[in-house]
Image 1 (cartoon, rainbow, N blue to C red):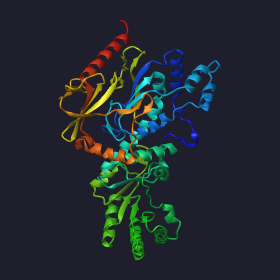
Image 2: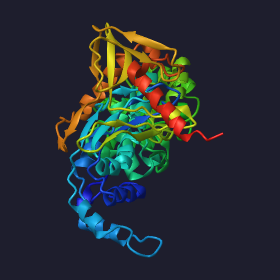
Image 3: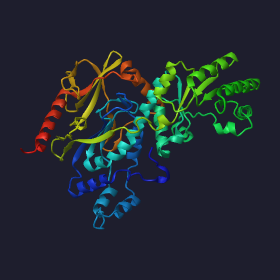
Image 4: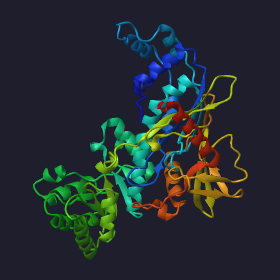
Amino acid sequence: MIDSTHNASNSLLTDFYQFTMACGFWKSGLVDKESVFHLFFRRAPFGGNHVISCGLENVINHIDALQFKPEDLEYLESIRGNDGKPLFEKGFLTYLSELEFRCNIDAVPEGTIVFPSEPMIRIEGPIVQCQLLETPLLNLMNFPSLIATKAARIRRAAQGDSVLEFGLRRAQGVDGAMTASRSAYIGGCDATSNVLAGKRFGIPVRGTIAHSWVMAFADETEAFRTYSKVMPNNCVLLVDTYSTIDGVEKAIQVGRELEEKGYRLSGIRLDSGDLADLSKKARDLLDNNGFPDVRIVASSDLDETIIQDLKARQARIDIWGVGTKLITAFDQPALDGVYKLSAIKTPGRDWEYKIKVSDQSAKATIPGIQQVRRYYREDLYDGDVIYDLKTDLSAGCTLIDPSESTRGKTIGPNARYKDLLVPIYRQGKLVYEIPTIEEIKQKVQEEIGSFHPSVMRLTNPHTYPVGNEKSLHELKTELTLQAGLRTMPLS
């Protein structure tokens, strides 16, 4: 969530080496060389098999505001090389000041489920412009996608119960908090405690009281009674400051007083102890005293694993407040998204496909100008093929498993499909209609429901077929061998 307040420029939000390379391309006369880059991730997080794409709206906001202002250029001009002289020539700074974005960008819409190696964004345009966008695009996609994925996992673990995001105080700074609140809502949370996020994104806000409220009064009953007077239409009482069961009984007492005034106790919150056992005892007390509609909220370092365990133990919890382990993606705080060059050409010539090879096979890239085609069978997704745009798939295709080339899947010519990457920019002009946050949130749930449940399960998910189209696989193999021959040492 890049800050755009006070007319601030975010054009310098990139790694330093992007500018040194851009300057190198400029000085070498290569600024008009066309290129294609793809943004993708290598490994799925949280022991799962997929990621929910999130962050595209912020990418659009960043690109639309991309302009090098005088203060940006003054800063770049102040940077010195090892000889004490300016690192960037005035001609290059003038070039930046006149830079007009004219790339084509295609991306998967926010809320789309994507798998390792599948491009989430494809950008085609002048190599300097594509290069300068590498770092901000990764920054704007990696963390939001990670949090949306975590939130969706927590949502599935809750099995239809309401999930609240309570992570603001533990988030990595203001920007991290705002980004995470939006992403968590998209992933499946029903509300946030973050009031600024509620205002900015239209997310419902929820909250109860803190232990400090209870401790500020002479006793727990007085604390509950006073809160019920000032917030009679939003009365959720935190009952574990002292003795949880005693706290529930006092909440029931105050609930009766509320009823006499024409209001209802909304809920109680458990924030410590054996949540399964305490929620059962609390539920019995509430039901036996005429409060079957009072909901039990639970917090206390929850995540999908703990929620699953509590569900298995038949905890009587209606609403889950999830904070630290969601807002920070506690068990895997980074998505290994990357941005790689896959094709390049000089004006007037054909595309030259590129590949990066590595001693680690997982780090070898896919060449070409890529698209992802997702096939359907009946009402469920059946498999994804990564293919080059020059390849005609009208007669069907064969996808090759990238981790095991002897394994593949053949798709017939009449199979239903959709291509995942859709036009966002054409020649630098926005052509995409940005959906609302509610539409994105709904898309996530529709996507999850379009895969077989075994593919979406939280532990040991079934493998979903994803592979390179056969001719693209062969091209990658050929280019890998060529690169290997170039680097093979002489005997």
